Image (cartoon, rainbow, N blue to C red; front, side):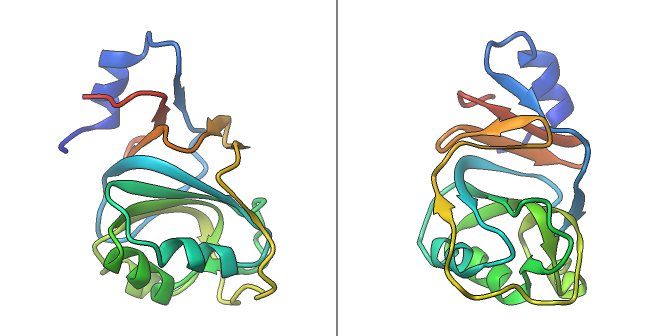
Length: 161
């Protein structure tokens, strides 16, 4: 699907369920634009559940990770980015940090994250999947649609074209 978030906003901004994320995120990965249906996960400084989700084969899905905005470790690195690519994930939005950004920037995936951090996350396995999560002024719900490009991130209850 070819789109720009600016064009989608122009065409659909009057819709009831249309949200625009606050511009908090930095772009990573070699795919500047990505979209898909949302899968959510809420974790804090622990990426075991993130890995388990990314290991699942999907089509046209985006993983939205509520990492609590932590700047104390990375939730995703190049290994998880490669797993995501291999299993059909279009991209990720991470309310937290990534690492290995020089490698990730060469991979065919789109990622938005707050920052980079060299420390890996804990491995205790705590977290929740498919919950409503809220950050950057947006409610992210499972199976809603996320569109991201260099202008920003928008979320819609319905597929936009």
